[in-house]
Length: 291
Length: 251
Ligand SMILES: Nc1ncnc2c1ncn2[C@@H]1O[C@H](COP(=O)(O)OP(=O)(O)OP(=O)(O)O)[C@@H](O)[C@H]1O
Ligand SMILES: [Mg+2]
Image (cartoon, rainbow over all chains, first blue to last red; front, side, top):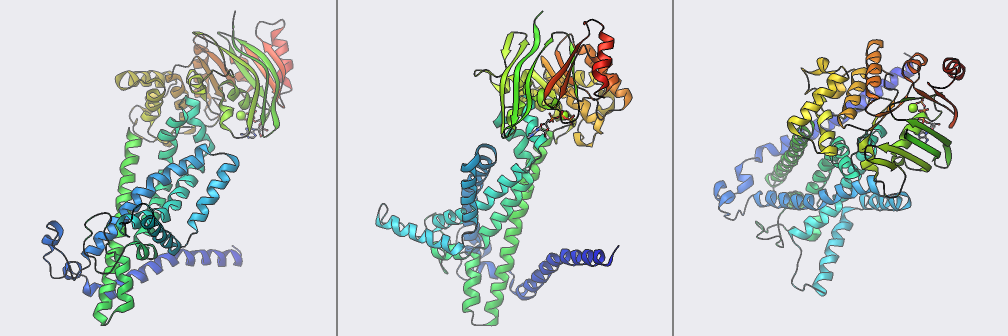
């Protein structure tokens, strides 16, 4: 091996270690700062946990409402962006042609590059508009946040579906038609399952992005002490927003550590979502392979 | 006797560049037709023109007439009313490189039967076993039907693809070098199978081997740079000499 080769492979090796190292460092730091405050009191304050979970007794001094709020907006964003994104990706890869496809995929890229604060402003402006025209009573809330977050992560879903479908080998594409399957059958039974892995990575990326985003929810309905939301149109609390306000306004070191504890909880929540996504994918893949 | 496949003035272009030009030929029912020619001459494209698979490539356009004689009469392949999916359900194809579904061996056989012919359960499994026996694969895979088809060897995959095509009971079968990745023994088995099939269905086979062509062919179509430059038929005068003369330049 020449010296250059050795240098290059050493560099690659070092860079491959980097993400792992950063990850460990980050988690280690979070654990050190937040572990001490991570207990039921952080979650539920002085309310008995079972009462808070099952009897909806208000929680005043804990982050449970924020966890619940975040879960709600992520699920809403997913409900909006996952089906739309997958369908749009299928359209781009399988049906759209020529210039129309170029224009569509350019729009998707534009949307992907949109800063999230703009999406928040869009939601805010939308609600102002609605208030002045059709619906004088509406305000910001869960549904609006979920909608805007869904728009924010939509391009990730579209691109993940589009790229993983269109990078399938040509032979696999021809296989369905050559057997006499129609286009829909080919997509449903051969192409989509084969592209499943890429689509699930897009899903994980989207869910993570929706869970962590603060700019959008700040402008569309997240507030500091809303408690549990009572309906889709209610204001709500959210973990990233809680972390943000804690970091901005803490008065004692313990306050700040509660912020770190909340960050850990957010991490656990997103990891749980990823895990759920992977389990779902595995189950679907098993069904596909076994029949 | 009616023509099994009849092609007239076929022209296929990819993005404007002609790949096949002015192909006119006929094959008879009960005959096995072998297509020969150099690499890149357009043999696979000619096969795909028969089941309209070229249409799946962007930028491809086809003109001319292709007619098939099927059990219920003549079918004009490129007529407006012809549904490509229905056509391909009756015209089986095995690709040049083995092309299994990323599924188990069993699913490879059963999924197309369910989707294309609506056959499921016992009946489908019965067909599966019969076809796997027919291509000589059953004994090799019967104890691992749940294994991924991709774990089979190249030749086994090729035979699986053949069995999968046969399971759909096609009336025309297009085979693109069916013995390319198969050892001598299996190749002979497949050849025997093809010879036994030719009473039931029309066969169009691309071959790269002179001995194989000699063994199989009732009719030979020689393609050179997208044009049909030679035809041979077993019944013609001085057949053997003509065969040697035509193919000496190709192989
Ligand atoms: N999808 C396609 N797009 C553009 N050109 C194509 C396409 N398919 C085939 N061609 C061109 O058509 C010509 C004939 O290809 P074809 O695959 O039919 O050759 P072949 O005779 O089967 O060769 P081989 O013996 O190597 O398989 C080649 O020059 C190839 O580049
Ligand atoms: Mg070929």
